Length: 142
Image (cartoon, rainbow, N blue to C red; front, side, top):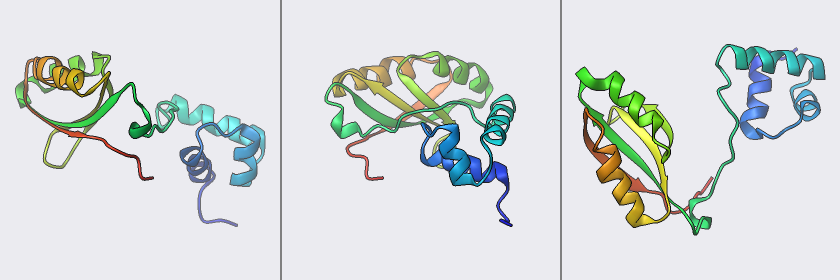
């Protein structure tokens, strides 16, 4: 018997392939299809699984530029600032961070100029955001 829990095996398969069918997950996790459905429903209800997404190679997106933007936020305005940042269409993902910046955002726009405008006008226009440090993504390696 495996020391890895059923939940961990199912999540591992989903992390490798978010489009895997219940049958594929069941086979790879060594459980039945009803068990997979039960665990996925429970994981979604608990907020462990928060969504399903496609991994994109930014170099192959001729119509988009992508940046990871580290942001510093005034602690007194943190809640309001994060709420506003999450509402911006250009912000695809927003993370808290223990690194050099309080927040990290994946930001997308039509091209580099538009991306620069989003950062300088929209991100830095949010009350409480005190700095934005972009890293423009070039090529997905893994």
